[in-house]
Image (cartoon, rainbow, N blue to C red; front, side, top):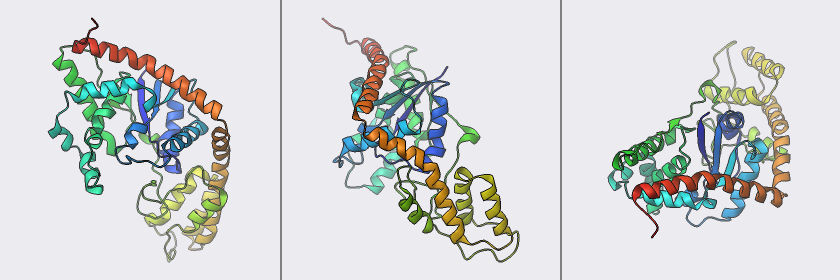
Length: 329
């Protein structure tokens, strides 16, 4: 059984891309592996050092992940800030992380280009904190997107460096968890690429029917096909990709045939797509609302997750302190 660690962003509001891109796989994965899922509230401060209602956003994302199927009995779900051992390991790993290598990371260069007024030390040492998050549980696998592959490589480097410097074989070198064909790329509604919160082109699992319809009806389209059986441009294929994950086969076949025969009416397609997304979202949205109204349940999940995570983390930090040479008098 693999030990898997995955960070959950703490900005709230999951969209369809999150669900079909990774979360659906997380739900399955938690029953096959020893999984740790943490809400990365410390990480969020690197780009938003003065967050508006940090607690409310953490609560929202916890409620959403639970509503989508993460099971606190099957996996360990916790807040990063509830496990102080992460901060201590982060401090210790920083002693063997070098400014030059951190400055060369792609994520750091991208962030300082986008936010030149906020180049803080936390942003620079983001890969070290990410490494601490992972190796504190001696993870063997980490699900990562393309934008985080270099940071995972840094985590392997810090684990390897620790072992080499202190002549131990303590930390494993975590490998990427590849979902392969099970990983679905959900496009945005603006025709520019994948669905994302920062791009403002997403449909959120928490959206109500009115909001979903308004967003879908604004989706980018063209003037329609002029020749039968012509190839679909990407902006139209995007709508069918969305339909593939929320609509039944007969609906998809109907609109594909209409497109092939040059009889497609995008307004009708969008109305159907909006209805199907609403029907897909409805049970998840209901569970999110139930979770948000049940503070006792969320508190219980967070407390149980922190206790389970700290059991693993405290052993690691105790061992690392001894390897460094910290001893009590």
